[in-house]
Length: 155
Image (tube, rainbow, N blue to C red; front, side, top):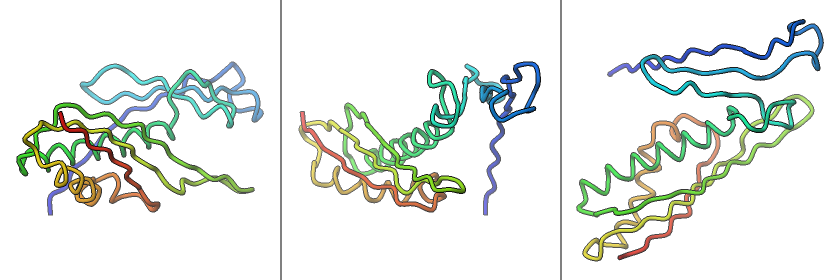
C-alpha cells in the first residue's frame, strides 16, 4: 500500500492583545500555507461562530475539496472512456447541522454542469459521475453522503 503525506502550515493571526482571555476577546483569523505553493489562504471561522465573513473558513474548504476531487476523478474517467469534456463548472453546497454541543456536516451536494463534445456519449458521460464519486479520495474519507446532481450538455 502506498502512503501519501500532505503538509500545511497554519498560523493564528487573531490575537487582539489579550489572547484567549475571553471568548469574545480574540479573533478567529488565521492563515494556511502549503509549502512551496502560493498564495497563503486567509481563513477565519464562519460568521455564525464569530468569524470574518470575508475570509475562507474550514467549511468552505471542505465543500471546495469535495468539488475539486470529484472534478479531477471525473476528468480522469472521461479521458480514459473517450468522453471529451470541453467545459465543467460546479455549484456545490454543504449542509451542517448544529446542536447544543457542536456541529457536523450532514451532506454535500455537487451540481456539476458539464459540456462534452458532440461526438461524445452523453449517457456515458452522465454515468461516470457515479463512478467518480466512488473514486474521489476526499468523498471516500467523509462520514456523510456526497450527492451528485449533474447536468450534461452536448455541443
